[in-house]
Image (cartoon, rainbow, N blue to C red; front, side, top):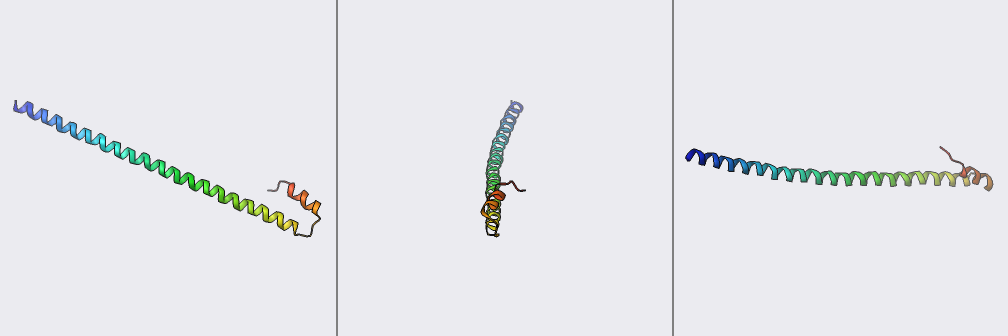
Amino acid sequence: MVWYGMVWYGMVWYGMVWYGMVWYGMVWYGMVWYGMVWYGMVWYGMIWYGMVWYGMVWYGMVWYESLFKTLNSEPCTQSIVNNNKIQY
């Protein structure tokens, strides 16, 4: 009876430890999942912000180039033709 009680108590204790591990694992997994989502949002936000910033710089370069060409004492028609060409 005492041995059986000890085994039963050990099973309960082991069950509590197992349940605690599962609970702790759920919290840990939740933190990792939340961290991944948060990190993904920040990373995506940085990429999005970088694309917008790069787009602004690129657009600014094109705008500045077209403005410079317009002010570069060229005929208007020649400037329009040059601006319509795809330049790399």
